[in-house]
Each structure stands twice: as structure tokens, then as C-alpha cells.
Length: 143
Image (cartoon, rainbow, N blue to C red; front, side, top):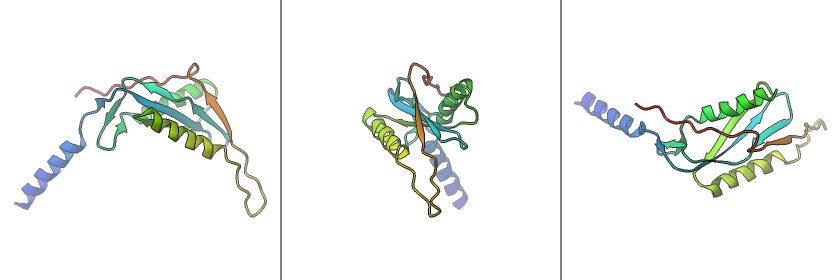
């Protein structure tokens, strides 16, 4: 009896967790990239994606890592190798603007001085405009 109960509960939980990605309408995204041995951070403009897909209760952007790969590939074509890229998203423009401004403020703060009086290099933010780079929507696989 316990095995059946466990199995049915497990299958129900899996069915709820594996809900299909659904087109959500509008999603706003921006990307940030950095190279570990450089003090330059690259930031894209906030972009609106009309047919991106969101899934799960936690509102996850479908295939977010592939959006980051798009940014990485763009930077590699521009001669910037080994960039670590992150794509941030929100389902409202107000939320993405808050995230964007908070990150930009955090990155533009003056670096702290360590006890050894050695200054860390200042971070330079380079902006990637919409004309130079646009995210392409990724559609979920049909199953």
C-alpha cells in the first residue's frame, strides 16, 4: 500500500512540476557579461520579447541559458572571448527596470580599499545597444 501511495504521489508531483512552457506574451530581458581577467562589464539594453515562453510556478524563462549563449556568441564575434553571460528577465517592464537600475548602481560603486591599501581596479560598464545586439525568441520543443 505504501509503495502505491508513494508512486501515485510522485507521479502527481511530477505532472504538476513538468507543466509545458506556455507563451506568456511580453517578457523583458537584459544581459550582463564579464571576463574574469578584465574589469569591463558589458550590459545590453532592456529588450522586449513578444513571444518568449515562461514555465513552472516559479515563472522561469524557457531556455534562459540559450539566451545567454546568444549574448556570448555576439561578444565572441566582436573579439571578446571567454565571457561569462547572464540573462535576466521579468514579466513586467517596471520589474525589469528595477533590476536593471539596481545592478547598474551596484556595478558603478567605487571599489573598496583592502587593509593592505591596494585598490581594486574600477569596473567599467560598456553598453551594448539594441542596434548592435537583439535577443531572438526561443520556442519550446513540441512534445
